[in-house]
Length: 283
Image (cartoon, rainbow, N blue to C red; front, side, top):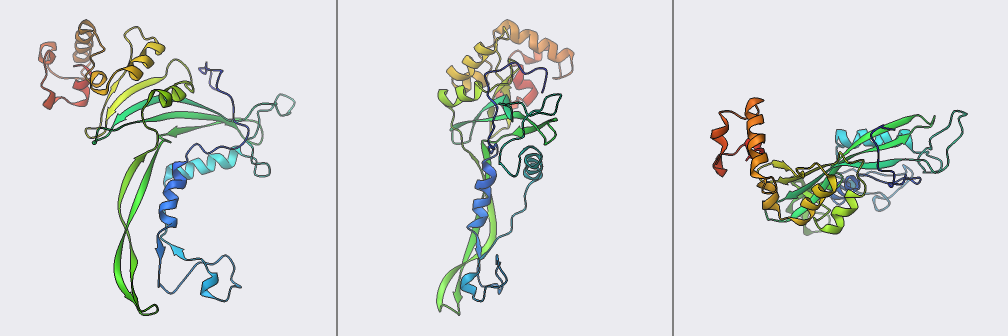
């Protein structure tokens, strides 16, 4: 386990849990995309004699590297006989009761979409054990987000049914779906799963892709959390929670470090339309 874990209130999972529920939702999009009249079907048994007994073929789906990596991780840390996470073992190779996999959140993002709706997504790490009791961990990124694939259809005449039917053409577009709306209750449930007080908090504007760290000037994580919870998006994204004196210091340091160009005076009142990601951070 990591030496920087300080949140001991997060309890380990014994039974297997799915930390990426979005993968099943992505699969559902394809399971409903049935390919008709192509002269072949898939079957669970070759002994089936009728097409009526065979399962229809669906549009093939390629798994992302993130999904395959997650599946390999699960294969290492879940006992296939019991469906439980493998436990930690002591020096005598005996299972330690109450141990399993523990998931901690390291970053929380409050994102605003083009339509003004706000959602939450996270990054984190799951700590578990393999069959030998050795520690193993896996990075989890944006489990509150999945990609919805949209398929196109074309109306054609079917000689068998003597009717006009919709025929699948294939994927036509994709849409990112966020599953966790921003509200105080959802934010608290994520905050309570933080790994430690090094938790990263940020607001992100999806149309521009720009993000702004939300951090109280004292560095107190509780106050930073309250800022993210209690203030509107524009207030936080504009850095209005940062005192002017601190902003001036940040600009000077950014110029000195080469993060933004020009002199400090160039950034006293930058036009919003020309603000880059780095410059936005120091406005």
